[in-house]
Amino acid sequence: MTKVLLAEPRGFCAGVEKAIKALAWMVRVIEPPIYCYHEIVHNQVVVKRFEDLGVIFVDSIDEVPLGAPLMLSAHGTAPSVIEAAQERSPLVVNAVCPLVTKVHHEVKVRAQRGYEIIYVGHKGHDEAIGTSAVAPSVVHLIETVEDLENLEKFDHDVALVAQTTLAMDEWSEIREKAANTYPNLWMAPKSDLCFATTNRQSALKNIASRCSTVVVVGSPNSSNTVALTKVAKSCGVANVYRINSADELPEDIEGVVGVTAGASAPDELVEEVIAKLNPTDGYEVVVSTTEDEYFPPPPELRDLVRSLYKLLGFAFGVPPLDPGGPLSKDKETSASQVLERLT
Image: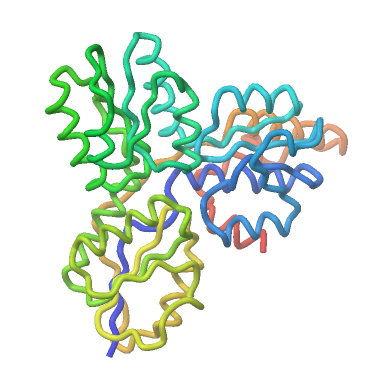
């Protein structure tokens, strides 16, 4: 006997929606190859789909041919890399999540004011690399309370900032320790943690006590997916599986199964997991909160698409069918729908 509890919210966040739809527009209006600095989002299925359409993902701007169109990923990019990209390409579209931009701004401002900045993040993660590079001489990357304890004690202004995709538990213990160590510690009035990441962790906690097994859909290099796995284990769930796709599911799962997905995982993967589980007692969607956050397309992309739209209408001697332009329906169109159309 098997029943599925489907956590809501799960899957794509507003930042991922923005990035995927932006790259999809580039694929539609520009002849490939199109280059993208780092994976557009941390999900193997999404990356493979764009690779099949002529997108080339690179880890160095030097790999981008001069003049080639380029997109910068949702995780944020170091200022020096953005400058190098703009020197190399006449069309650079920055799909950075606005929440990551907020953290970059905090680091820049505090650095200019003479602060030492303790940055809580995951070493080697694209977001951590990009944020640390905003002010490398004063940013100190740590992952654990032990890292904080081993850090030199600063005798002047100190700020604490965080990678947006951390688990709440990862952040809270370090925040408490840092506040005790530095009574005048600066932290942002509004948490650096992504609201969508926090919501997905809360939704999972809401069902965990009822589950004998939890399945987290998402890639291993997705920080928020890994965080969801840690949340499930911290809640005492007996069996926790982090999978890329339904093909990786064990065949003998029974009982009450909680299903969630990292913020970079498309709905289609969740649907395939439910189909593979084939719950004899059906499934229940457990809603913890409703999200309505929306991030519009990058301004560089808006300018490009609108210009092409007007040019094509003029060239064919017909007025645009939609006065608002092709991006006017962006908010109503989900990234999952866009990916399905790209198949």
